[in-house]
Length: 384
Image (cartoon, rainbow, N blue to C red; front, side):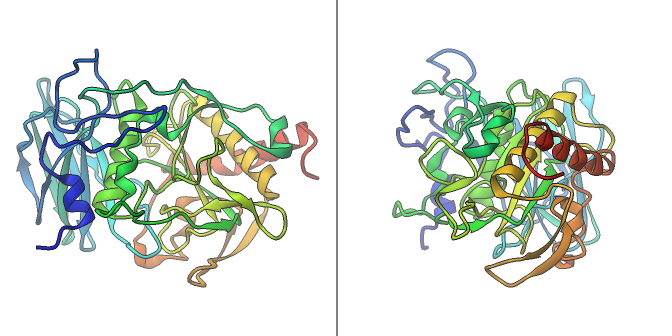
C-alpha cells in the first residue's frame, strides 16, 4: 500500500505531528498529559470510513471536541449530541459548503464537546464519513505569541485595526500542509483581488477558545479534504478577534503575498472557500451559525473594519459590482464586490446551494457594504 499524505498525518494516536515552529506551538497528538500545565492545543483523530448513520458511539480513547463530516451524494445530514445532560437539538451538518477549485467535496465541522454518543441522520442519498477530533487536550512545548493588532500596509493603515492572531498564535500545525517527503502539498499561489466573500462556519461552539475550532476546521480541510491548508483567508470570532487563515508567506501581513501585481496592488494567496471561484476571491468567515441569530456587535465591527482594510488595500469599491473572471479556469460571475457566499450559488450550481452566511445575517450585508464605504470616506479613502 502506498503511503499517502493523509494516512501518515492521521497516524496512530500518540505520534508526534509537529516539528518545532518558532514562536508557536509544538504539541503531540494522542496525549492527554498536560504536563506543562492546563489544557493546550492538540489534534487527535480516528477516521470512520464508509457511510455512517444512526447512533454513533465515539470510538476514540480521548474526549471529543469536534466531528468532521464529509458528504457524498446529493442529500444532507444532521447531527445531535448526547451529553451528561441529555440530547441536544438536531443541527444541520453542512453550514458553509466551502470548496477548492479542483477537489470539490462537501464537508463541515461540528462541535461535540462532552459527547457520550452522537446521532447522525442522512437524507436524500447523502453518505457521511466522520473524523473524530480533539483540538484542546495535550501537552504544549512552546508558548504562543500574544495577540497584536492586524498588520496592514499603505493607506489602509489609517483605519482602526482589530485584535489579530497569527497562525502560530492559534496553534496551526504546519506539518498538515506537507506531503510525506516534506514538500508542500499545495504551494501558495497569488492573484490580484477582485472580490471579497463573507461566510459563517455554520455551527455554534461552546469552546472557551475559538482557536480550538479553527484548529478543527484546519485539520479537516487541509488533511481530510486534502486541500493543503485551511480554506479561508481570515476568521473572526464573537469577541471580534481576527485570525490568520491560509498561509501566504513568512512576513507578518496575512492574506497577501510578498510581491505586488503589475498594477501596484497586492496579490492575495489563493484559498478554498467557494468551489471553482477562489482565485482573486478573499474569504472572510465569521465563527458561528447565523441562521437564526446575528453576529455579535464586536464581530460585526471587526468584519466592517477588515472589509474596509481589504477594499482600501486592493482598490475595491465596497458598494460596487464586479464581473469576476477566475484566472485559473475561466469561470465567470457577476455579483457584488462584497458578496455573501450564497450569492455564488447561481454561478456554481454543481457545488450545491448554500445558505451561508446564514438567513438572519445575510440580509444585513447591504448595510455592511454601506458602513464599509462610510468608514473609508471617514479617513479620506475612496470617492464615495
